[in-house]
Amino acid sequence: MEILQSEMSFESKMDGERIFVRISEPAEKNAVKAVLQIVHGMAEHSLLYVDFANFLASHGYAVAINDHLGHGKSVSSGGSYGYFGPLGMEAVLEDMHKLYRFMRDKYPDVPYFMMGHSMGSFLCREYTARWGTDLSGAIYMGTCGPQNPALLAGELRVAEHYVKKLGPRSHHPIFAKLSTERFNKSFAPNRTSADWVTRDEIEVDKYVADPLCGFDFTTSAYRELIWLQKTISQESWLERVPKPLPILLISGDKDPLGDCGKGIIKLKQRLERTGHTVRMILYPGARHALITETNKDEVYADIKDFLESLVIPLHE
Image 1 (cartoon, rainbow, N blue to C red):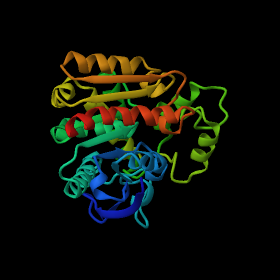
Image 2: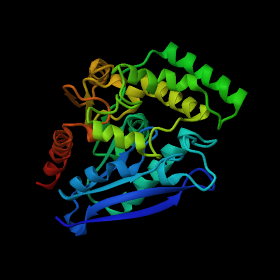
Image 3: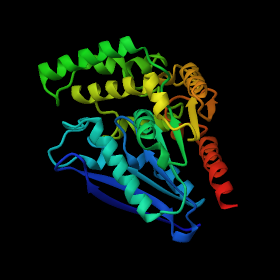
């Protein structure tokens, strides 16, 4: 199937910023059977998902992914990488919803799905709690399990302290030590600072060499990230996610963010306990970024199969 790749931008919820978007879609509009909106993770950008987007587009899906505030091509001249602005995650969520409205207007009569990876899975989880009734399904990829609320509350206080002391655009090494550096230690002795991302050393080296990947978040962005993780770990989040929404959880069983699969199993159990329909896939030996893993073809196929299982019955 012939596909089209295009780029666009729109005004962000944050004044003075524009959000960059990549779209891959079938060349023939009538061939589009569903839309997938992808939400990328922390310190990465939309270009990493183009191969996967083209794969789905070749099977009849229109795929859109934006660079978040403080990421990729959504950083304006003089802007700061790893900084969400004064509105924080609220602006990021509103930008996601604006892209949803654009793609929904373009394709009003087909199913609409959302997939988030890592930090993007946190955003996707909160998005589905707010606007999930507009979706036909959701994919939480490389996400976390339920977190200790007291621990998160403590980390949030630390982040607030440093934002007030050093300013919202400041940096402090404590936060990387609590997150990415801690995750990477799971694979010591380390070859690089990003061994935890994937088993594929070529992909790890590309990630490390990419100036748009792996940058440090500002103190205010870490505060926002902790707030988001706290929000989606609460029991109230489970109740806000629509019960009829089909959910796919996919993770590597060596992904430290998901506690090597144990956190993902707990999340699935919590969702099922509250009446949600959940499918889970844990890939043996896989680490964090599944679309760059050594078994990425399997991951691509499993995501397509999940989408097809929901799209095809609607067209019969």
